[in-house]
Length: 123
Picture 1 (cartoon, rainbow, N blue to C red):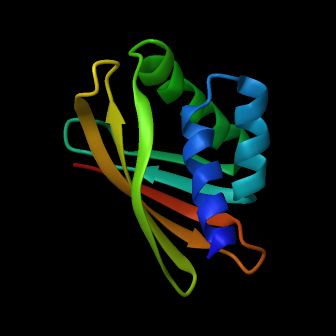
Picture 2: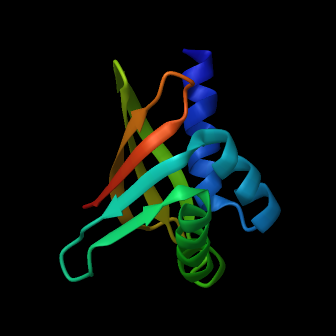
Picture 3: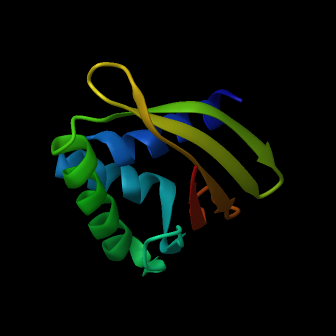
């Protein structure tokens, strides 16, 4: 369980850190080299990113817009594991503490313990 808690912490920090070098290291730590990221939210175009470079670019632009530009802080609100799948729930708070965004990610994990597929769902 301690390993899983650290994995989730690293995953959330990959989306949260403002340091590109730290972000790259965390992404390489939690995602497989051939991982896929999917988003398809109402009002937005469907998104699919493949591989570490594409996922790094996506997370970086989200971070620039919401964390750096908006001052939002991401917090994990829970996680649960089921065989090779992991569900991570989270929220983003404004500097005043108001929750402005909630969501969850459904992650498929390979035998080496890295993400192969990441599906985001925003509430």
